[in-house]
Image (cartoon, rainbow, N blue to C red; front, side, top):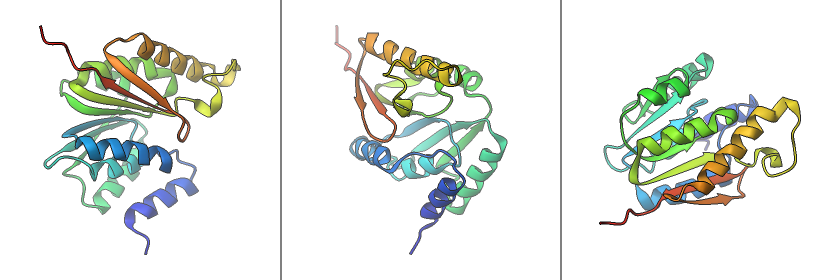
Length: 199
């Protein structure tokens, strides 16, 4: 029998709303299962599917803050979250992520980035600021149909590709993080903060 979560996924796919791919979700779920985060920050809610999936791995009393600016998506995400009685676990923050992130002061065990590709470098900077010492940053769709690591430079996708390339460069140059790029879905990076050396 189809669960409510399956129905949400099926409807999103039918309507061509980008949601997390199964193999990407599997990789992230394994990490969450191991780490049991207390607080998760998601940048890009869409219809709430990934937040709903992540909520299963939260530590007891854990919560997810998820940011979305598209009003139709917010409405649908709220309905989906309510249908599974998860309002106490998932909090939608409405508005532009670039502006909202600057104002956030909470610390998170995990940040999941899956919003405007051209803004990934900005999202990364704020994610690092908001991350707990042993936290993990996931970023989805990094390979962007293979364009990110190719010579692709067509005008239509140029901003997205430039943003993703800059994002990867910033991670590569950041000695505080250990980053893996995994070829699942459309490319996923997992960046784990290295343990700080005690003086």
